Amino acid sequence: MNWQAIRTIFSHEMARFWRTPWESLASPVVSTVLYFVVFGAAIGGRIQSVEGVSYGAFIVPGLIMLTVLQQSIANASFGIFFPKFVGTIYEVLAAPASFIEVVSGYVGAAALKSVIIALVIYLTALLFVDLPVAHPFWALGFLVLTALSFSLFGFLMGIWAKDWQQLQFIPLMVITPLVFLGGAFYSASMLPPFWQGVAKVNPVLYLVSGFRWSFFDQADVPVAASLLAVAAFLGLGIAAIWYIFRTGWRLRN
Amino acid sequence: MRPIIEVRDLSKTYASGTVALSGMTLDIREGEILALLGPNGAGKTTFISITCGLVTPSGGTVRVGGHDIIRDYRAARSLIGLVPQEISIEMFETVMNTVRFSRGLYGKKPDDAYLESVLKALSLHDKRDAKLMELSGGMKRRVLIAKALSHGPKILFLDEPTAGVDVNLRREMWQVVRRLRDEGVTIILTTHYLEEAEEMADRIGVIDKGQLMLVRDTSDLMHEFGRKRLTVELVKPLAALPVAIAGEGVTLSPDGAHVSYEYDTRADRSGIARLMAGFAAEGIQVRDLVTAQSSLEEVFLRLVEEKA
Image (cartoon, rainbow over all chains, first blue to last red; front, side):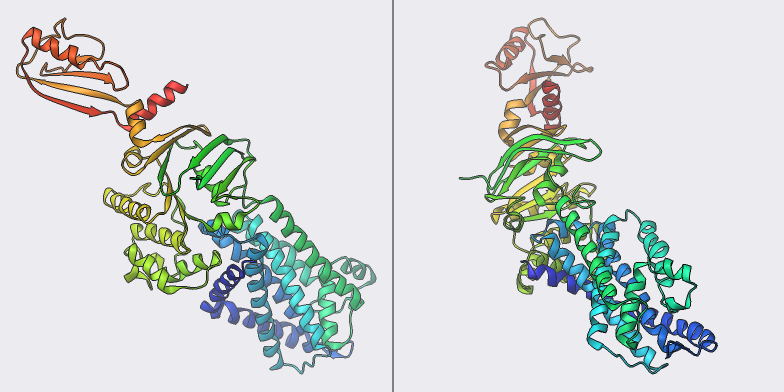
């Protein structure tokens, strides 16, 4: 195992994160504050509570999930797309490092960045609302696994994308709609029956629900189903990475 | 001694159907400079890319230091440093950070003292904290070499190291390459510049249409395929070639002041004695004689024509 290569890629990616603290940390925090103003203050004024939780607090886990999904994909896809774009990918491919080691470096850094941002958003939210965490261990578990899964997807997108437009396409056209329609800002039980059925086909609902359960001890779907969804995302990501490892798809052809 | 690189029946067909390499077999000796020469699309870069792990081969094997590049890729790649054709660097990085990154990828523990010695050897030490975007083109090329040397490889691949660079920089690169060879590094370089191959290489391999047409010692290749031209400067110009001198390969310059004779160095008889006897018989006074070997470019063109 080439641990040094993992450490090198990981440190290189984290250095980029700390080199641009404004883009890395301030932007997601500002976005979160805006969501609080729009959803928490404007809409929250009309919705006093959702299932016994104040609306302002209710949307926090969804907000965190929204950011974690977007940031994981953005960080990991950029992390591998950028060296492809400028041509420096050659030295990663020529290094005596397995694909798994390369993925671990990029994905590990992207996931850690997302987790840091999630914690910053959580701390920011504490300024606005009272937010106890019912199951801290599970909250961290859902957070880390989701960050890892979507960083893997981001990595895949970075390998798949041939230009900047493609790099933006899936986060904008697929992930953001899925998160908005996945109960980030409302409980699925607030929807009419037909849309409740539709929502349950949305895999992101299970992530948001599981994460929200770890805060408030209540969920739209059974916690086991949420765990299964996270495991499925992770499994899919790993399977796709394995395929690339075997075939060299878009990298060694 | 076992070759440091053994290529056997190597082939590559890209998904587009393009056959880049077809059945290439080659042994590369430890410590030599081998120049791979060929036109665009001949398969030179594909060969390098396969050996370095950038491209998956369609068939055949490559062993580096006795290690198969697929089954035992870690050991094989650890021996190799690669300098790509394009200047591919992260412009916002510093020189030192980018060579540290390259060393780390190869699994080597940080060793700034070693990296600084590499930078010194490449005249980059005073730029160690400069951002890559601040460097000149020549310095960027040297940074690529420093990155390739950061883990102390035994083999260095240089893919068209002097493509598009000026004459001074080209000579500077040649010096760097020679010094590395003197330190025992095996060097494989591809080039379009025939002069470069002739000047630098111990051996020359000629690739065309994905096939290795030949590999020879540079001097042997020049001797084997080389033709020489003898130019005779006359004291008095001639109106026409006298019969005693005229023959195959003999031409008179338009001003009549020079007689040229092109001959094959491989032939049993060069024909020079017969030519000179002709001058004597006709009483033609000779001022000077000059011989010149044909360039590698002419050799290459002849070789391609012969195979066609």
